[in-house]
Figure 1 (spheres, rainbow, N blue to C red):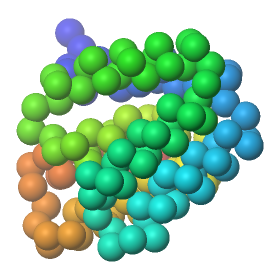
Figure 2 (cartoon, rainbow, N blue to C red):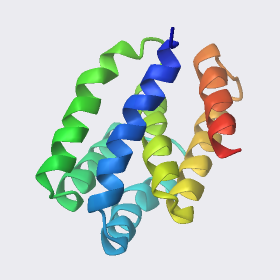
Figure 3 (cartoon, rainbow, N blue to C red):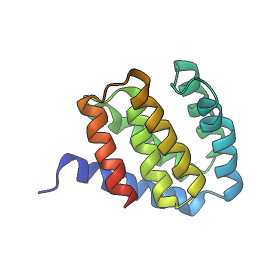
Figure 4 (cartoon, helix red, strand yellow):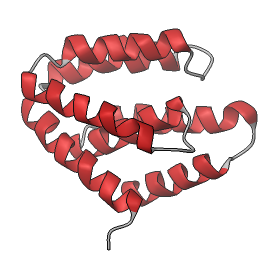
Length: 140
């Protein structure tokens, strides 16, 4: 039987296939510049405003209907990620999509965001530890 995380990763991979087919390099660049770049340029933490800005960038960058449907499915699935704070849930999604797109800029930005969030309080919680394990496994 598949574990919860295996099933989660499969879900994200299926979504990433859709994103990869529809996303142009120009759109990826716009996403990084408008959303992730702004968050990383700050204090290393994602505030509510920064999260809203990233969400806005995603919705304006990914105009393809099938991609939006895929993102809606992810959002519906998020409440099941109990024990993860909002930042880590966003990162978990972003890492799967970024890794499958094989875009080094996306991967690099997500790894930096993960590191900064964990370092923000100096403590690795159980949720952060499990996320880091998944991230490291994915980057092998």
